Length: 159
Image (tube, rainbow, N blue to C red; front, side, top):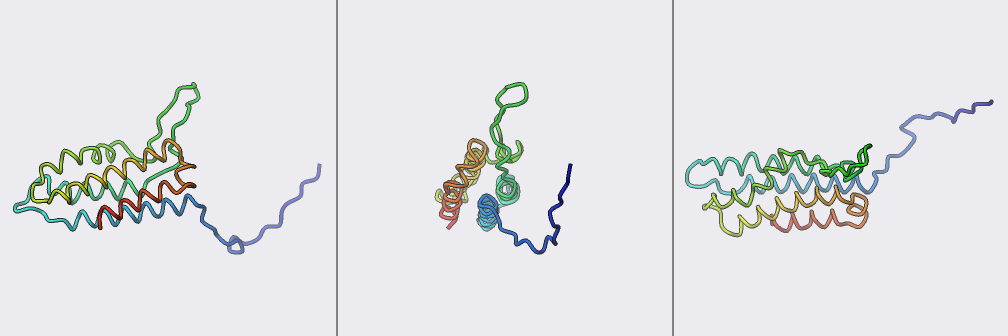
């Protein structure tokens, strides 16, 4: 038996080319940072309140965390026993529960205009939907541009 080794070269010789999914995930993280910054810039209300601080701190951090942790490998799959396991798209349960709570929380923020409240709900829904989209069909979501369109909607909601 003869073993032939491939010539080894420096890793610097091979140019790095990002794959399409990596670019989509980087765009997600950037959109999340923009959305979080927008939420932090909203008025705080006449007096400090738990909802106001939750929106500015917890929600904005959750949106940033969610968009930076999206993971196409955390998709729906079969476990070794043949049982279907729902993927999360990289979204942990704590972050998901904060995003799902948004429609209830904005009702307790009367200092925000209805437009601002709707935009916050839209951003949270889009981030949650992006994670679900990745969990259900990551390849299609990335290659057909569905994920990119969601970030365009996030940008539209915060502008």
